[in-house]
Image 1 (cartoon, helix red, strand yellow):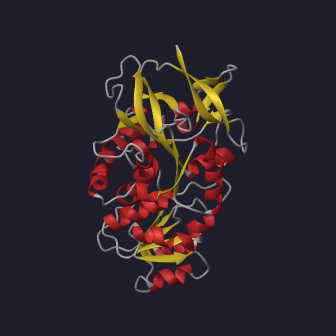
Image 2: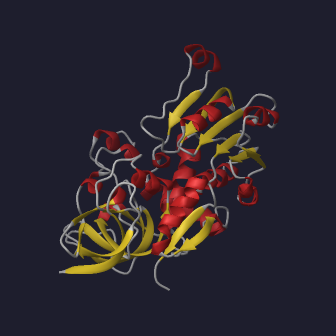
Image 3: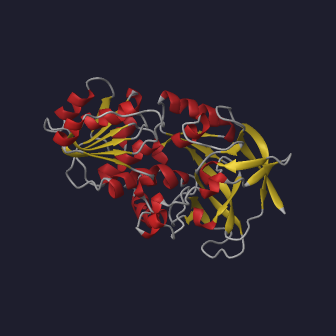
Length: 364
């Protein structure tokens, strides 16, 4: 048995997607089929499409998704048909060295599902799921450990944003950087993840929270989500940040673009002894340079941040409490609701640095 759904299928690197019929198998042992309600368009999807991140073709991209369990395979006990869930694109095996060290976000097997075909086109061509999820489709089949039950009181229509953008941003602030009350934070890049970092920093008690972007049009949205200050990214940025932080520089800088140039800007805007957290996904050949003296003298910490250093099963319920209370806003980050056919335009908005999150909506 199988199920045929509409999907945005990418045939090759750099090729625009085509809306095609996709044949999904029934879920096998340990798998679930999820009917997708909405899928966020993340910069990582663009990075897969343009070759910044490796991807096998043809593929259905999309990894920030939420929906309803339609069917479960043998041995699945954690979720049941009819249950609302959020996709987890980096499901931990709980058995590898990293998982046993308490670092499930670095699991050796988190992306195993992305390496294997999960569905077919109607002509029998195997199709791969982007980051193991394939959320740019009406439905997908994933391992049961790749879904997290949606906590009560969260609107399923915007819950997709919780699964990647907000989880990553909240985790960057709380798990990776451990921002404390009264510390200053500067956030460089205000897409969906960057806006989530702004919200999480404000909730953590950071002050000031300085939002930075190349587009001045993002100021109003950034301030509405908790930024105390807004700066346009230009050659005066370091001086401007120091002017807002007692001439020292920020205690914490978050790079949420994925660019060596922006990493360097974040470093320069940080105080001696401060921390730079790199959240954005950059290119393999985009190198950052530091001299040996400044590494010693500045005493700064430069760290990466994979998926917000999060454990979705642990962190999503915590974040949901703040969403229910209104302290973290999901819908406010969504600046464009689009049909499946609108994914190429969403990619173009990201290239131009426009808007927050684009959300693909399925059904009524």
